[in-house]
Length: 362
View (cartoon, one colour):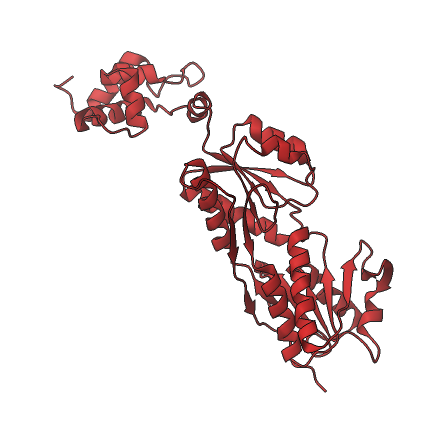
């Protein structure tokens, strides 16, 4: 075909192989790697080497193969190739309760950083799918698994995963995989110390069930340590399913009881932003002004925390950094550049002061 221009050459070749675009699409078959090899005048293995960007192929051959691929509209069957190799470029991600906006935002960051490393992501819910979701990920031959949530995951999941694929736990923890986490205890202490420095002495800690158990315990430990250093007593409450009601010492307590009266709580450190926003909402219904009558600080710094409606002071978890370290850790395990003992990588959090906290008046 040396007498044709490049465009004419592609057209003639397409006619020869029966892939003209004006044909009825329902009658056309998808081009195969053998069609590409025939059109480029090379072997199937050479086409495969060009697709995988293997060294040792001449520039002229590489150009001819790429031209044939473009002319035919050929798309490699990536999944089939990966299954033959017994390895995919897919990461499985176990997510928690997406009611918590932090989890929703972290999934986006994980997906973004995985894509930058050449990996795709497949998500399953720990809450609704449990062990079956993990089995599904393994059926798809994922290269590794990221746990964004581990609370509520059945114990036997460890025996499904461990030794088969690497696992990384991010913002949650387990002793059988690598861990990437925020410095939750330091964050809890810093949040509480911020309230103490504003003059508050009756400071409560509100826990929320959608916070990972290990993170919740660490944040509460930081809260208790800051209070102990200041000579103050802790008061820990747990949200219930009943609106404006919390639990303390296995007893239900109305939010109003805590926030009114001469010995009322004047400041609350919530284990996450979602719980802090529930406090703001409850205070609004009760006519309690924030921050004049009540200071509230959260943990996470989700996107809605910065909206004018909430203007929430919070401890910011660096989501992009957490996701990047997680993806790099898992990729290094898979690629054999991280071997040996499990690693734990800890990222500091930072105080973001907005309008939900202020100095105690009087």
